[in-house]
Image (tube, rainbow, N blue to C red; front, side, top):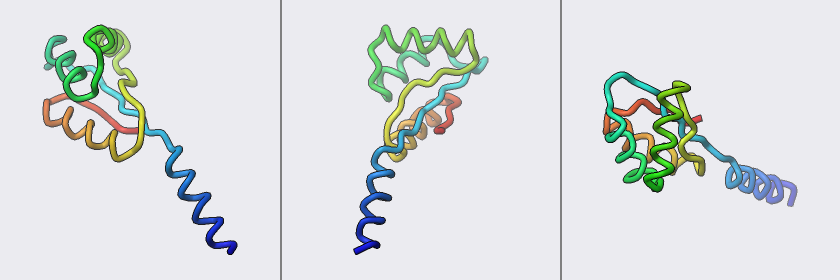
Length: 89
């Protein structure tokens, strides 16, 4: 009985863990490319993507998406495939 409760608690903790996808500035990609990737891969509106691109440009990085670890890793891989510099934290 104790083990079942522990498993349920651990399972619930995993469900509520939030991972964050962070985009970093680089000197290679254009604003247009970054915006297109954020819209196409992360599901941002064009306005949201433009804001994130400006934050990255001015601050060096921006938290662009949050969610489950698997989902963030998949998005990160697609962004990396498009030559963007990202990290999941």
